[in-house]
Image (tube, rainbow, N blue to C red):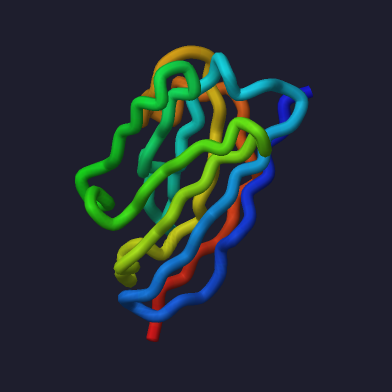
Length: 123
């Protein structure tokens, strides 16, 4: 059974950093892409970043380029999202999701989802 569990969210001041983790179980990441998505109140879920396990390719939404970094630890079957220089507009519930194949930032293409972790950026 595919399971994804996010952790690492919390409250941080503008300009601060957080590292989110997405622990995968029930499958091996080797043939999957893992995406990070976020959803703020009243807004649609949007793609933030993704990483392809097969070739390590990564993609980022324009809004987070240069501030967020996605990485993969195959030994731990875990994907991380390092978030630096956080802004109030980054406030949202962050989800990780898995799909067989290549990296996409389209939520509808993903099959399995975690439960989400809240990130709040506020002074």
